[in-house]
Image 1 (tube, helix red, strand yellow):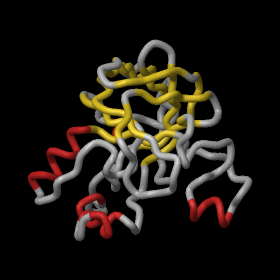
Image 2 (cartoon, one colour):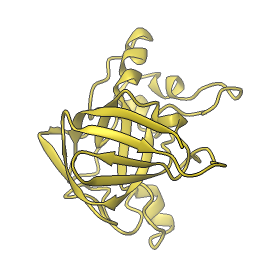
Image 3 (cartoon, one colour):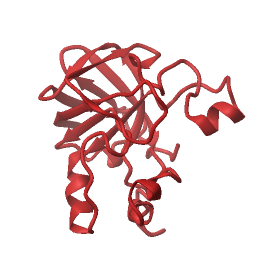
Length: 182
């Protein structure tokens, strides 16, 4: 069984459907719902496109996580991006999030557990945030995973999380499937 350790760098949430999210001192995860007070929280899809097309579709995008290491890579490529800028709720360090398998459980802080459901695909609004950034978030067809926009998950067990909280990743039993694009 794969075991990985990391740390929470920053947390963010927003009640509005904007692109970026303001950084907070702490966020509260609610089981089966998502980040308390966040525009993407809820039992059913809250992403604007998905909610219009399939309003009763299960919300597999309750929590968005991005590795802080991505920001350093993007900086080397000419983009300045920080925690919350790409709409993530949790910025992590020390985990290769996009390489974790489907169904991995992230134990965050004292009690929260997030079950990974997929890779985040780059939003069309990303180039409004910074021109040319969307192209940098998509890898060539031969590289896996194709997207490097972080991962999405559902809240399995609720709890408060904040900067400095430990993260432990527990992969499901073998054989594992890679995270699908959501």
